[in-house]
Image (cartoon, rainbow, N blue to C red; front, side, top):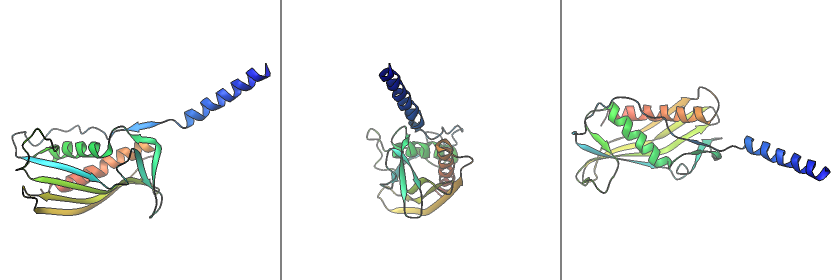
Length: 185
């Protein structure tokens, strides 16, 4: 009887430990605005590049000026680069009317189209309670020449603790970035 009781105690302790270490997966929120641009506008190929330390499954946060940590229990529900690229395209469609932004797609004839390249050096949280998005964007001609480009750096404070608030703040910082880009392309 003692063994059964002891076994039950260990089983319950194991279950309690698992609930404290639950795994959460996150997506950036949907863009719920009306498109300003029509699909008949000239195509604009949009590519997003993440710094290697950001191109991981776990949500990244900076713990100091020199250290970053990848969360193990709080992860992106899909590839972070793909998710950010889709979000940028959706935002661009709602913030400008000059181009119809698209993913690079081998089934479309895109060789003669301009390209918007967004390189993210930061897309992370920080121990200070902020979401950080920084990097540079380049508008490239069909031949690959730089037409325009600029660096960006946006910080948005989290409205509460937790990864859900961090994901929302990252989306807001990304929206500020895309808004700046959309005014200049």
